[in-house]
Length: 200
Image (cartoon, rainbow, N blue to C red; front, top):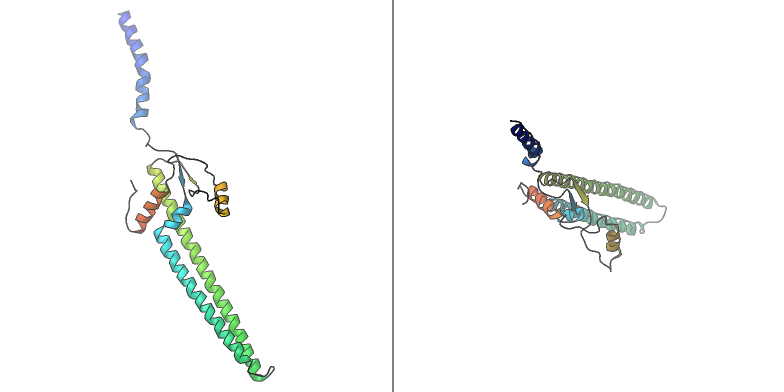
């Protein structure tokens, strides 16, 4: 009887730890790395919706440039006409005042339009960044990524000083399979085209 109780006690001592650890292995954490990298510059360069909006802003900027050129031609023609009048004459003073006011109006209007374009570009950049950030968060949650670091995936060009500067300042020296840029870009472009879901 004593030997039987002793055997049961020893059996309980050896099996209890294994039983206690069982719940920890019942629901393992999702597979994946806890750190990932993303090239935001590459994302913006290849983000379909962002580039469509940016091209539209460029077109508006081209129209503004053409309008400024026409205004200059108009002012130049006015100045040539001004030479036809005697300096100090009534006609001269009237046309001179008209041209001065016209040049001032052109400058104010053009500055306002440039500012509108600048603010529009800032707005679409901000909205695109927010969209990319949401895509990164969604991707990271599904694949159990705890930290996403921004880096530059482009290789340094020894003939380009700007490329060398970016490479030297790149916070990532080496990595293996941590770049999620293409996955996030695919997700963003899927959302923009009306699709959904995470890329597999």
